[in-house]
Length: 494
Image (cartoon, rainbow, N blue to C red; front, side, top):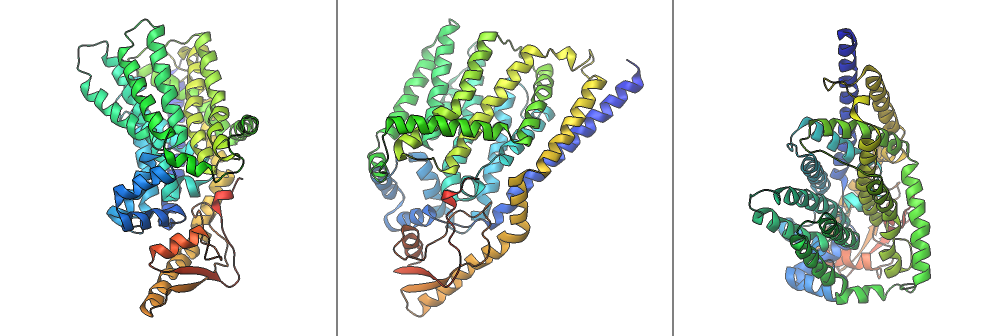
């Protein structure tokens, strides 16, 4: 190949990757900047009030007995107002979780390919995966900006990735004489915390440990360590599943525990979710970029990957079963559609499995010489394809409806809404100074920034959201007055 063609291919591929990285950074920055308008809502006020009145451990124990077995998820958003106050630092939560998710993704990727955490390819691919996930969020308001939802659901994905990376490193170290105690201890802690975040991660972590145990048996290796990890995981599963609070909570849903309804709903909504995810242009183009990423990582990795037809079939079966199986707990417990934040958590797991599936197919059916020459550079044709896909990826981000809504909220809707919500505090302070215990607050008449704001108090002072809001500020009752809109972000599917 002439040197001029090689140089042209190198320049073209570098330009494409810079374009790709720049677009991903802009998307991530958009979601971080939206966080400055995040505002406590719903359960945030309930949890903060309970911790303040009876103490951290007592309130968590009451929560475990009376409402939910999510011991870690509950602890995360109970300790925050205790340490920082409910409003101080609240806008930083989303940015912190996005940064932690980036580090966890890079850690898992570096572990799988035996590369440095700071390897440029690891960082670039991590950037793309994180961008793909954020662009695919169905309901960022409850999944990312509502403290109770974000600290229960985003942390589960972060911990899942860290557990995956640790498990891979333990697997690698078992063939050496190096000690396992440090990695094993860290994995046990991560498993314990991750199992208590939410029911979706409860199932995923348990299934992952089962797969690791069965894989060790299948390969004829000593399965004792993985059997111990599986047993520990099942003990954590029981700690959550048999919590008295779960039964109390489920009793509030009249359609719960209907097998036929749960199975039918899981299959119907799971199928709908798969089609909705796979039909988004940014997801399609991102999937077409995976072969380039996987082959580039495989070329610099000291690990050698081997895929078989049977293995690919198993990975495909698991991938397309995820949206169906993980829908079931919500349908079984509530008898209806899971909340959007649960769907986003399922999407995250599906996305990880999808990356593994497309990556495995690429390694099996697209040998590296078709993409790279003997020097490791892209062939000119491959460079042109990569550049075209990167350009299409950027265009798919531009036309993405959720990203456009987030951008519109950031520039037009979020600031007026946030100013109105903070204005309420001044009215409440004035009412308390006058010795009043019941306060009428003005309703919001503008359009809600649905990308960032989750749930508002109600016109009825007896609604649980209004009660928790009033109790947090030391009032007997609050009520919205005048014309306006009521926003219930919990009921949004779009």
